[in-house]
Image 1 (cartoon, rainbow, N blue to C red):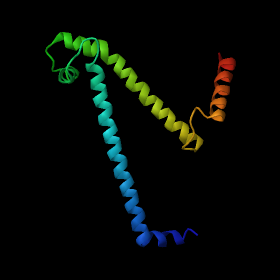
Image 2: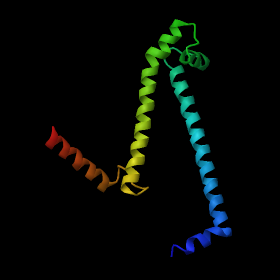
Image 3: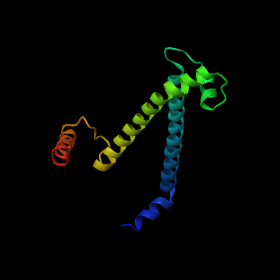
Image 4: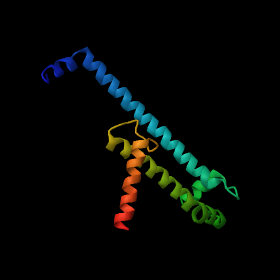
Length: 133
């Protein structure tokens, strides 16, 4: 059975499969790049908007250490950056956790709101608290 697979992939069907995989890979890279650009833009916007508005160009200058205004540096680096960085890290951690959750279960439709999955997680959490705390 495994001897027939190379013959199928060597012909026009194999070229079609390779073309589809290349197209999927390009789309994946393009979407990842677009989403990364959106995340960076929203990160800068988060640092710019607040009780005191700081223009995005000043935010970027402060982040790169090119700003000569100590007030802008204080607002951006000391007040807003820790909160924005924590929010970005939490979002990344939740995304990674969801991906791992789906990979471990082997089900791309698995989500924490499913009854069986969340009941098992609750059981493990309660067991951990009771036994190890």
